[in-house]
Image (cartoon, rainbow, N blue to C red; front, side, top):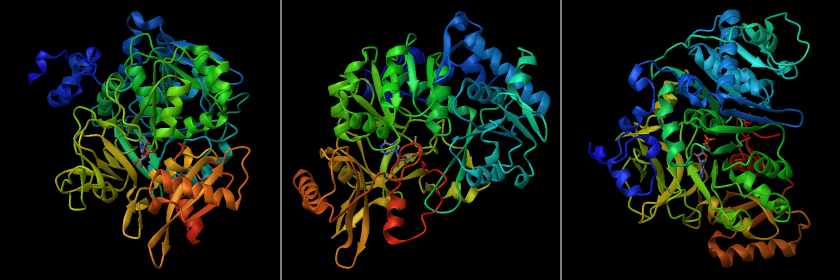
Length: 572
Ligand code: 6R9
């Protein structure tokens, strides 16, 4: 490969010349960054922690943890010891072996991260769950995966239906005054007594790493299995897209219950030896800005819904904090409204870089790079090593500006290995020509930037015009009264569908007929008259997933009085 003439060590990769790198890069070029490239011994946990703990990085802070009660930090050496202890407990008490499923169901805390990496050191497959899950959601996931052990807290234990889960044999509790009985063990106590040394279980690249359940519009949530091979892409994208440098302090606001919270909350940054900040507790604009100030966060990865909430909290409060450490800001999970980017420029004096990927894709695929010109509203361009296209339902590539299925050519390192117990579902993602079909609709412009339009099933057809709900929502949130908006197509005998908007107002605004008319005009003049919502309904809150996605299918179900499908991922 021609790459020999380029700097091939991933650390030296910057995408200054994106076009050149895109043409020449091959994923095998990224492998030499790992110690298994030399030794043949492979485990993501080793690359993320032990490798650094055995070098001069050992005294570098790996984890800063803060919530209302705790404020702690751990070096790579300390994380190595804690994760070794966790691995020893899981092994000695529960006999956890390679391939066993271990779930983690607890609020963010250092122990969550120790258990996560500890389990991976044993070659176990980890299923992280949001602490807000209720009993039904926990049952579905543990049953489907036949989980053998769970790490949780005494408070959450009542939501683990132990009697319904024949495979669940070990429950590790993290908390105070734990009584060890009925399959329950005190994780902290056992870890205190455990050995600090542990021999990592070496695995194959294709061995299971995590199991993230995601909800579709119908049926039970499906378990997306990722394997150790994903580390190649985690590492490489943290370098290219997150632009991580040795001295960076990085904060990813995502919970490990969401794929962003594992891939980019833990794995990617630790693979590159970065100090991460983990903040526990609930979202509050003041405490978020305080985190950036207190830890000197330089790289910040969050989601549009959080940025919109910060924007809604106003610009005054930003000025009370010193955010000058921020160097690079990124977003994922939902379309990033141009309005939010403009706001970011104003208050942080930084561009917010959008990134697109999915639970199933395991890592970032289409992104805005530090060196790339940003077109607000676009997700950016595919990373080197990834071919993206817009295809029709037969898998034929469409020319620029045609809306269609956003598809990726099979074969990137972090792609899901399977859907647990459901090969048929897995196969249904692929079209002829080895296209992985995302379920998102989008178009590509003449410069190769991709523009998100909506989930395929969310796209609205009104009077023969195809309208992406996101475009309308983005325009709506530019209106000073609108805090959040969700847009759906409502069946209409004349127009096929009409556009209906659900809107949450900003503080200080009252829902009036006048306001409805004003908002409608605003979209009409700012976007297109066919894109203006014919119906507007005000709600205090919109239904959202825990990762911040507006659940349009729930809006639609409300509207049409239909069953809303699986709601386990919905925020309270
Ligand atoms: C990582 C993650 C995947 C779906 C995806 C798309 C939406 C994610 C986006 C985006 C527009 C972006 N999505 N990033 N839409 N612009 N930058 O979010 O995984 O929770 O599985 O969601 O999220 O619809 O198909 P996941």
